[in-house]
Each structure stands twice: as C-alpha cells, then as structure tokens.
Image (cartoon, rainbow, N blue to C red; front, side, top):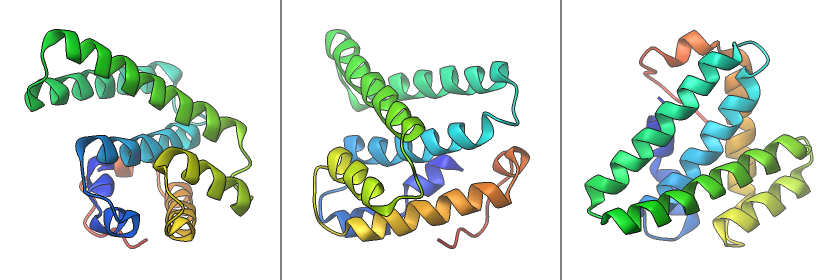
Amino acid sequence: NLIKLTRNKNLYLKLEKDETFSERLIFFFFHFALFMKHFKKTTPSKNLQELFDFVIKQIELSIREIGYGDVSINKKMKEFINLLYSIIETLESSDLNNNEKQLNIFRKYLNTDKNLDFYVKYFNKYITFLRKNTLNNFTKDIINLNF
C-alpha cells in the first residue's frame, strides 16, 4: 500500500520532473518515514525493524532488477540508505505542524521550489490518514486513497 501511495501520478506532475526510480524512492521514503514515525508508538519495535529490513531488501532487489552491477549496487544502496536515514531523522526532529518547516524539508529533498504547497497539503492529509487508520489497515488492500 505504501507503494500504491508512491505511484500517485499527481506527485510527479506537480514536481514537473520525469518519474524516475530515484524520484519514486524519495516519495516512498517520505511515506515510509511518516508511517514509521506514526506507528512506532503502537507497534512493537521488533515488527517495525522487520518491516524496515524487508524494505531495504526490496530496494536492493529493485536496484538489481534495473540492471546495476554489483559495485554500483553497493554504492547506490549506501546513497539510498543514507537518504532514508536523513529523511527519517529530519521528520523525527521537525515540527510537522509548521508549514514553513515542511516547505524547507520538501525544498531540500525534492530539490525544487515548484508546487511545494501541494506537497505540504498532500503529506498533511497523509498524516491525518495515518492517524485515522490502524497498522492492520495497511496490510489490506486500500481501494480508495483520497488525499
């Protein structure tokens, strides 16, 4: 379901960039980091660690499927994991109720000044969506995502 959220075409149309693996991964990292931040209070850390490990393995498999060589895979994985940790740390330490701080976060990670208000609104709606749903809901197929 996090992948379904990441495939939202509006995320890329508003970015006004091509939809690339790296761009999709950045949006996935935002969804995943907010997901982890929200559910860490109610979910055993062992379960979240298993989910985190699974996600990292899937990223590596995706990089392999793209066709990178073994040396490139290690380099890309290091870059992507550092990016994920950076996003997690930034979101953990930031006041997500402050729109100006959110704008700065998106400016930094999306490397653009275009349509940043859209991303602030989108991810605020996503945070509200997380609050209204349980972890169990994410294990089921989400039919309609209206945010």
